[in-house]
View 1: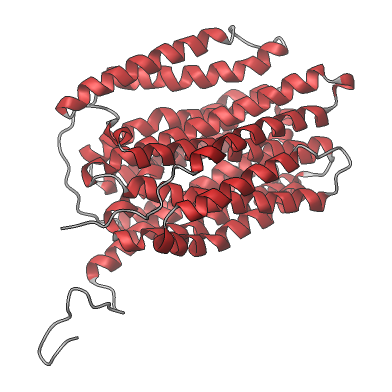
View 2 (view 1 turned 120 degrees about the horizontal axis):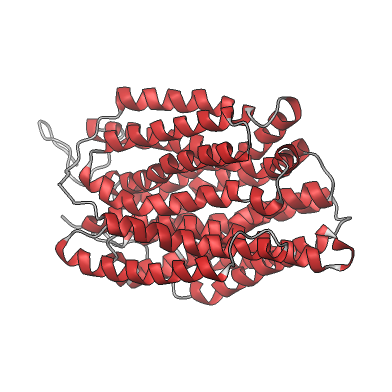
Length: 482
């Protein structure tokens, strides 16, 4: 209540946003819009892979590096963002991110062949990698704890439109214009976002002179790069196309990972770690991250397998492939605000457990697909798949970051983002490898056998998440105190 001449009390809601709230909203939606452009760029590639295989004269194992290499580069760069968000103001980080992404998009559009196209994708990934944790950290810092779920859910409406539109847009472009136009269309949107950030992104942030440990950067690249490259090489080795024995990069990556972790544990005592690992001391954070990693492996596996199955097994064109995955993306966008609001009220566990059950069930259903399966069945399965993922990902990510102290939020978001991309790259490489091995050994070399084997692998991973979901906390995020 307020009396004459009195101001609004601290607990009284207001319908008029303050200047700080309005400024925070502008920043968040600018970041969401930029993330939309980058996710659009990432998802248009999945439908284009079969076309690029023919046009560039490359194998399936080589083509999948346009996706897994993109994710791998993000996994290498994202650990550095914990340092960047402490050392530089958000505006400078944003402008550098969008500049790299725009430059990479231009390189891809002008690429005469696979090597230059791969280089452009790597530059794009370097810009995208910085944007993901910048967005997550900004939400945690600018949005009150009681509205974070709703904000994350509302963001899903915009961000989920990109994966929904991406494959459809890619199908139209590939049918009417050609694969280079996928980048020519994205480029002006990226430049517009860059100009908007230069004009309106004004955020005050405390920065400090944190030294960059170059040895940690090198170890990070060797660790994540070696593991994913080794896993990807298994399928190529089966076809006699591997440049090196798969065990060699895998061993290098494993050793580098051990050394990287040990070095971060030592450096974080003096506040100089490239990636502060103290968030992993929080049990709720670890449980959520494990579930996010397993879910992302299944998600990226499905995203890469579905277009290959639709075009190579069911023999539909790129445009129809894009339309087939459109309903799933739209459903995810529509569910975002609903799930976000439910998370704010009931926490993560009542959403995550049924989501994991749905995810595992539908992936087992994917293993029953054949060369004569109706297209509408695949579309329906994909819609159910994204419903399960929607119930899991937004609550898990919000819950994980909401449990951390404020001084660890940037490193927490960097850890989540890094492991998401590593999981996506590993999932893509794993499922392509399984599909390649199963198809080459199947009677008659039928692709449907390889696709079903890969879906079986994804179903087993999703099933493994079910027991872990019961460890998710019953309550929502902790209430912040002054």
